[in-house]
Length: 335
Image (cartoon, rainbow, N blue to C red; front, side, top):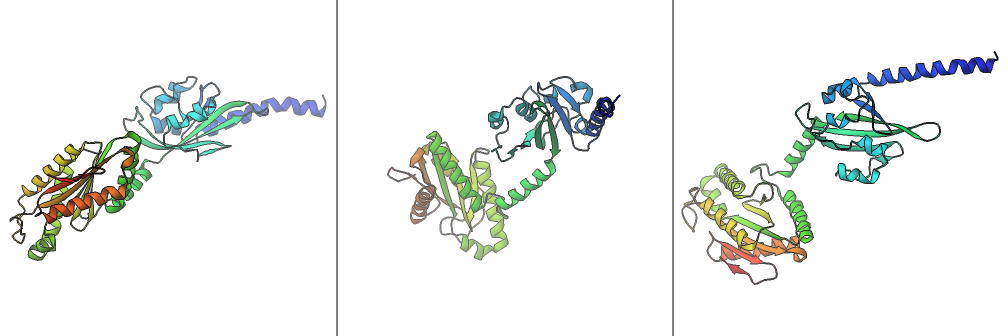
């Protein structure tokens, strides 16, 4: 036997040994990893993936059931989309993906997974990379996963702190501006109504002078609590606009409904009966409110706030403890 034949005779067993070693190494990686073939059959489901998902390798290897580790119903995982060349569909399954994680080495996304076996949702960083043979034919896709739940929760907490007013826990001015811009875009897209309420605590400087700044802070917190209780869940946004001024964004409600919200809020704060003997209005804390409403493409954030501010001025000019309202493109009126 020639030297070439001897080398050739040794190559097949050596390759098998290398292949077996590769599988064993992958099975014991500390990174949760699974591998599917080009038909989405699971080839490898390593021990770290078992720990992450609560699903054993015996349950998924040689099946197409890897989705069970992440979702309550059958759906494509990132590896499936890569294996099937369905790159244009990635946004449908991972809405926050914008193509930034796409390269010659595969695809990267961050996603929220319900993890049914664990009974809790995890935030995962997911990478799916194709494997080709020497001829360039796809033979497998490797998906690796990283639990980033703690990082995302910490990031969310920091973002929440940055977005909230420290005294009242309402949205701060910056958050209000961003939310209003988003609401205007949505109203234009859906041709829906959008209202803004501008709110001022009547004679608040006199309140602070009479009762002290600590009582003033307590007063603002009580009003903020009443604002939150008046709103419709997550769709409405209440913010501390600055000092004793508050603002509310009311998406997708008719002007008459916005008027009702303003009046309900005004009455609700008066019914708190927070003493204010320095007020020229009454002997308790009251609000003046100005509202503005527009619809569809006629809306502009600055114009909406300006119209609500003008309505607020009318409320204060006409005696305070009342609400005024204006429709963009229509005559203003008082209620």
